[in-house]
Structure formats: structure tokens, C-alpha cells
Amino acid sequence: MSTSPTLQLSLGPVLFYWTREHYADFYREAADWPVEIVYLGESVCSRRRDMKLDDWLGIGRELTESGKQVVIASQTLIESEADLRDLRKLCDNGEFTVEANDQSALQRLSAAGLPFVAGAALNLYNPASIGVMARAGMQRWQAPVGMSRSDLARLLTDCATEGLDQPCEVFAYGHLPLAWSSRCFTARRHQKPKDRCQFVCQKYPEGLPLRSQESKEVFTLNGIQTLSGACQDLRHEVSDMAAMGVAVARLGPRAGGMAEVAAAFDAARRGELPAADPLALVEAEVCDGYWHGRPGMDNTRLPAG
Image: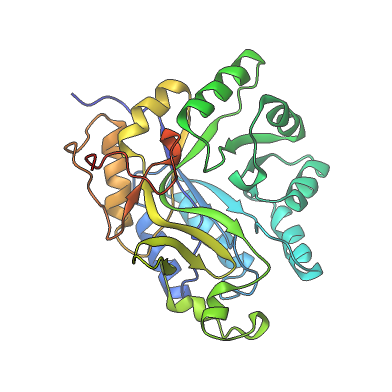
């Protein structure tokens, strides 16, 4: 028997570099998906200039009219004064809550007395740091992507004990964002300098797979960002997430198949799970190791051996 959803679904910001047409088509479709929250914006690389802030705000207004709660994500790695100027404009947009993904955004938003969402890159691991963020204006926070279920359950219990009731969000689907660098690995793969990259990462709408000598996809390169090679899928954990106090499950956008992903997670939060065998919603290896306190690339739903 299905149950009413107790967990909200969010659509994270697109981490890859798409064309303007792809973004427009994607969010036009996303307006009808069963997700309550949509994150917009370029959170990876400032050289990806196809979409300006006004473009993101325009999409945000359209999604708001469709009943979505819109959040604008800030860039995770700030490297220049130009990046800071763009960050100030984003934080001062006047319409939408901002997801702070680095200390520069956090300082700007807290100094202005603006509410914000704390991204996973802020690394909130204990009630003390969450309390500091709450006093600064944090409205919701995303757990670090490497945090296990048991550690998060303990943290949520400790937060409740200390009266910290800001909702927690978990990265439940997609290639896990693991690291950022001042170097662009995709440009390097094409033997181009970062400042003259010719935007080669746009050739890879779901990133560039990095394989081991055994041909296993270990990482996914996405410009200056390194993602997991496998795609995290925690559909079977959403009821447990809700029970332990997680408020939002985040779905990381991919270039294809996201309507099916959103529908599958919506069904899962209603108690309508597929058969026990792992189902790849899109063509990619699946992982859930971090959630179970194991190496991140592990898939605990595969049969042993």
C-alpha cells in the first residue's frame, strides 16, 4: 500500500556544461516532475558563460509559477575578483534564496542578514558548526556526500537535542561531487590551458569518465570538478531517511532519463519500490557505499561475490 510522501525531493543544480537550448528544454520538462525544490545556477566553473544570472532568474520565475521552490546555487570554488563580483550579484538577486557553497557566499549572505541554504561543500559534521550556521541565517543544510547513514542519524539526534531544527538534505541520486581544483582536468585531457580551454567540457554533457587500468570507471571529470565514477542511487533508503529525520532527498541532474529518475524516487517515497534487484535508471554503474559506511564506489545491493 502506498503512503503519503513525508520526504521532499529536490533537483540539484546542473553540474555539467550544457548548451542554452539544453538547459531550457531540461527545465521546461522539470516543471512537471514530482520535485518540490529546484536548484539553479552555475556552481562549478566561472568560464561557463552561456547562462547569465538573468537567464537563471528567468527560469526560476517560470518554475515558481509551476509551484516549485527555487534556490540559486553559488559557485563552489572562487578564484578571482571577477568571481567575487558575480557572487555579490548572485547573493543580492533579491528574488530567490541562495545556496552557499563556499565561505565567500556565506559571509556575504550572513552580513546582509539573508537566509540561505548550506551546501555540502561547507562540510557540516557536528551540532556546533550547524548551530553557528543557524545563527547566521541558515534555513536548510545538505549533509556531506561522504557521511554515512549511522553518522548522520547520530548528528540529527544531537541537533534535535540541542534545539537545532533546520531541515537536512541528502544527496540521494547522481554522480557524487567529490572535489574541486584550480586546474581543469578536462582541458588538460585535450592538451589545452585552462584559460583557453575552448569549453571542451561542453562535449561531455555527463562528464568525462576516468577509468582504471582494469577499465572500471573510478571518477568522472567535469572541468575543475571531480565526481564519482558510479551514480549514487538511494531510492531504497528514502523511507529510512524520512524516519530518521531527513527532510529532502536531492537528485543530481543528468543529461537524459531524469523524468524517470524523479518518478522512481517519487514512487519510492510513497512506498512503491521496485524489485530487490538493482535497477539502473540510466546507463551507469550504481553505488551506495558511503551511505552504508563502506568505500563510496561499493554497491551494497549487488549479490555478494
